[in-house]
Amino acid sequence: MLRIPASSAITAFSAQHEPVAVVALGEAFECETQDCYAGQITSETVLRPHIDMAHFNRATGPVRVEGVRAGDVIRVEIEAIEIGEAGVMALSPGLGVLGDRISTPDTRIVPVRDGRAWVTPETPVPIAPMIGVLGVAPAGDPVSSSWPGEHGGNLDTRLLQAGTSLVLRARHDGALLAVGDLHAVQGDGELGGTGVEISGRVRLRIERVSDAAGEGALAALGHFPVLLHADGLSVLASAGTLDVAVRLGFAEIVDLVRGWRALSWDDAYRLSSLIVRTEVSQAVNPLVTARLTIPREWCPTVLFEQAQCD
Image 1 (cartoon, rainbow, N blue to C red):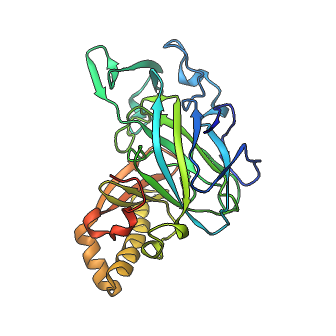
Image 2 (image 1 turned 120 degrees about the horizontal axis):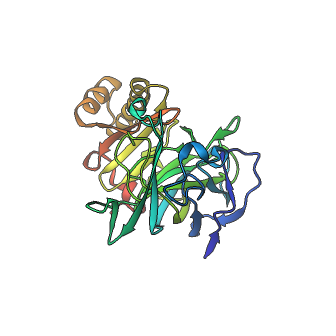
């Protein structure tokens, strides 16, 4: 199996980058990743303001997928996530939604063992390994790997775990996918500005939706990434404010429901208002990401027949 080293990484999604590897549709491959600080924080004496942020949120790639053309809808299946033995939680003035209350930088090395992240020796938290950054080259100018958007990117969505699939529209031939910023565990919102930032390895497989189940069910796919998971389908909408992200995401939800149920727009709007769950994936990046979920029982079953959403 192809394994791409963490040294082959980018800090911006762009079609200007030469691919570091080429894979076929349906071919499993692995990407090694550094933590979001590129391994610069090696002890609790190293503080966030002292590191080189030019290396922040490095994403391994880009990977060119043979057979993918600009405009194709692809499904990125997350088959496995392996993480390191220790992660980092760094605090710094201004970081997170209560960053104004932090006066002094502080670093915590968080051991990971026995399926738990040990925030303190007396405070273990069950791990739930996830991907923070996953996306493809955008249509226009380069986009920093710290930004989320229509191309994916820094979505910081805790449901980007093994067994889920991210659906994206390729903007360029080959898609040019990259992945990074693993977390041993992260809460919704990433409100403190950090998860347990950790290195690791991800196994992915990419399919073209037109070659798989679900093409018709995703005919009304909008601009934003869609996540297929055990509980249903989530639109991951990013914008400058949470209310705008929710509005944009809900508009795409209504269009999907309208197509699935053959309803008028008015009735799809009514139904969506009753069934959709609205959550916050992250509220600390340059754009915030809202997660709007249609429960699985309201989704076409064909969406989950080939995706790993058990």
